[in-house]
Length: 288
Image (cartoon, rainbow, N blue to C red; front, top):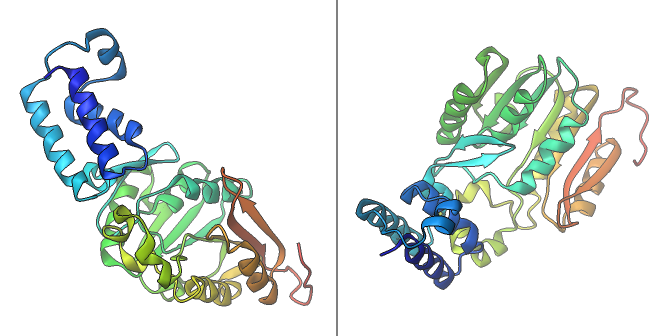
C-alpha cells in the first residue's frame, strides 16, 4: 500500500463512521502514526507505506470505528497553543472555550488571584497563568481523576508550580479566601439533550462534566449564587454557557447583584461567555 492509498483509506474510513472533520483527523493520524506529512504525500505519494505504520493506523481506526474520540486515543490535545494531556475523567478542550480564556485575558492584570471551578484538564487556569505575569490560581473539580490530570499538565506547562493549586472539591468547598477573577466552564447541557449528542461525546466524555441538570443551568446557578462571597469587591465572574443560554445567565447574574453583565459570542456568532462584576459599592446594582 502506498502512503497516498493509506491516506485515502483513513479518510474513507473516517467518513464512513461519520467523523465530523475527517480531513483534519486524516492529517493528524498520518502525521502521528505513520510519520507522514502533507509534503511527503505531495512529493512521495507513491512510496510504499511502512508496515509498522500501517498496523498502527489500523489500530487507531479500529478504535475510531467504535467512535472513541481521536483526542483520547492520542492522549493529548492543543488548547491556546499548549499541549494538554487528557484522561477519561476530563473533557476534551475545545476551541469555544478559548473564547472564555481570551475574554478573561482581556481583563487580567498582573498579580491577580484566579479561581477556576470545574477545572478538568486545568486548561483554562494553566493558560491564564501561562499568558500573564505574577498571577496565582486555584483550580477545583469534584473528580479526583481530573485533578490528577490537571496537576500533570501544570507540571509540564508552568515554570513555577508555586503559582497554582489544584484541589478536589465541590465548587467553592475547596476554595479558601477571595479572588479577583472566578472563571468556569461548568456542565451546561440539559439532561434530556445528552442522549442526542454524537457518540464521541455521549459515550466517552465524562457525564458529570456535561450534564447541567433539567435546564442545563443547575451548576451555573450554584456558581453565581456563591460567587460574590468569593470575589473581592470589583472582582469579576466569567462563565462559559450553551449557545442558547446567554439571556438566561445574564438574568441570573443581574438578579444576583452583578453589574456590567456582558455576553460574548464565539467564532460562529453564538452566545458563549457571560461575565459580570461584583460592585465595589454593594448597594449599586445596574445592568451592563
